[in-house]
Image (cartoon, rainbow, N blue to C red):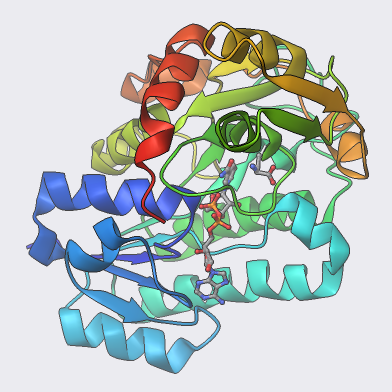
Length: 315
Ligand code: NAD
Ligand code: AKB
């Protein structure tokens, strides 16, 4: 019997992923956890535990309490927040991963999901259609922690046989929760401000293209990867996930088709340098070939769905 523990379930991905996992595998089989309470959908849809992923003893108790067989470890400090306090972010991103790797080994957890990010790439990486295997010299503490994490995931797979799987997500766009302190957050904030005030000051320049993905595609990719037969998973560091690529100006123009009065100004801050060090677009050929990945949402469809749903947000 599959029993899933989601760590970081109150966050941007955790909220949507927990709801979908419960839909697919049964509410009683998915335990959500975080250091803070989640949205109503997550809190009321099944079991929820307050859990600090730095507390190895408590994780161990929860694994035993629910007979956990799979872990989705989503808790992390994202790129923008990490730059404000690098050592703290490094400790949380790395120590939390080690807690999960070691406990999974000890307790024979069958499958683990841990996300990497396009932030693992750097300025020396080929920026257009970035391949799966390429130069990776990240310049942010977030990117360094993701690249190191990828190497450790592969190491634990080869050395201990741990079935740990990973995706390098691009920037994710969703309406259920606000984004969690990253460089791609502008593409979520712009919708909230378009609805709330009709004005948005973007912290990136209008012409910086970044790879992005609508949350439904990201959740679908995550579950597809986790449900694929082990022999199909050829990449044990982390799979590239491409999605769509657009600039702030392009998303502004698309939103203006629904909200013509929207006013956007551009005032790049420290996150501009982070964005410039990341790919402009990403190739996810390996994911397509190995486990049949294909994204569904383009920019117009994603904007339409965001506009239709953003008013329904409950947290
Ligand atoms: P988020 O910040 O929205 O959510 C992270 C959650 O982790 C939060 O609810 C937070 O309360 C929780 N958390 C933080 N510290 C914790 C701790 N010590 N113990 C338990 N929980 C803790 O982030 P997200 O956007 O949902 O990202 C989830 C994962 O996906 C992260 O690893 C992130 O690096 C990765 N990722 C996200 C994106 C994106 O665009 N959202 C893109 C690439 C990779
Ligand atoms: C961030 O901007 O930090 C995240 C990511 C792309 O990893 N959204």
